[in-house]
Length: 501
Ligand code: SAH
Picture 1 (cartoon, protein in one colour):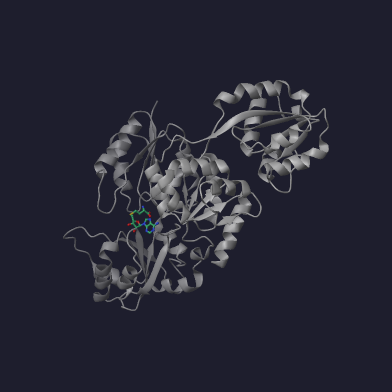
Picture 2: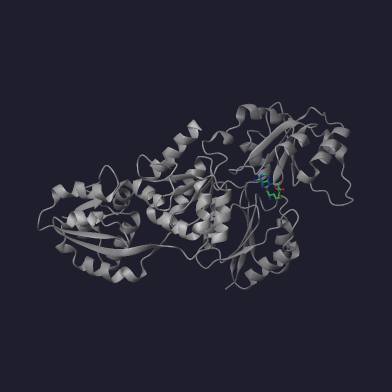
């Protein structure tokens, strides 16, 4: 098979700012060779078994030379693989993408370029600065701020440009750039901005004049990566800034759900301006439990009720049903209960409208709302996770026969992040979210005893009382608990809290 390489622009940092084409390639790739400045969340979309290679070059530490990286892309493609070379922003804007493409061409490797949103444009936009503006700037110029030793630059020509100037890789030379522009004729009062970690939850912006920008940026502690914008358009920021106004802007939030589910919650948090770190704390394992479920499905006619207590439970049940050559019609005539709205929605996706959804989402309430429909000869099937709470079974089995069938286990994932890494992430975070008691158990298992005091200092957000109870077992008190025990409720309480803060 012939391999192929794609030079893919990963955009400026905000998870949403990648192209559809780029994302589809990430999902298909055999090998992803990625840079330092890409949003690492994209790597979670790589398929199982995809080889992930870090080829980042920091401003100081060159871990792999450009030649080595270019060769590596070509070699992997020559092995017959689909290679995605994932680069920050746009691959051809100061990304040395051109060199990589030339190497591919020379090696006879077929390749394509997938453009990305460059930070030069998007970074200004997210800072509230339109890069051109009628009557203010009718051109823009993207310039490297990195000056090779002994390089002579025509500063006069740059200083004479009337359009917006955007310098990339310029933080080490910020003072020098400002000085040269002023000495060559640009007014020292020209508005200027430094935009650090643009489009991410860490975005910070310093605004001043050309003569004052260095002091202002240093005082704000802004280093690399930053964009330096010079021109009258910078003044529009006072009217057009939007990104910093999002409720969770500037907050780093740890998300501890199973891998598949984590991304949905993270996405919602990012919409609220947060920076998210996914530490998947549970993994759904249904390996050894298949047989019991198959048996229950064979015997489905014998049940009058079926109770689902999680989305995973629904997914696994219907997969098994389908594997047995059956479909949702097998549930006709049964009373179907869902523990809460997410489970209800998962059932609806399978064409089943739940008969019973309690107002509060705990086992006790499911039992209370089921009881009126139960007779002595009822038979309840309860397919659910290993180690689930006993209350529901105990309450119902006083009235009739209840078959609990363990269909999966919410297990601790084989860690991609070890304990030290998890603690390091925890230290940097402001908020930690817990969406079930198993995420609490497994996360604490991961960070260990020494992590608990660190966790104590963070804003801990719990999805509901059962999760909070689990936290209390470790001497932790949630700072916030959702009023409605759902992801929406969780986001809601965080938003309300941010408003009063
Ligand atoms: N190909 C990239 C640029 C690579 S050069 C693009 O199109 O955006 C790396 C430089 O880009 C950094 O030194 C910084 O100046 C700029 N940069 C990239 N991402 C940035 C971000 N999120 N915030 C601020 N500057 C960024």
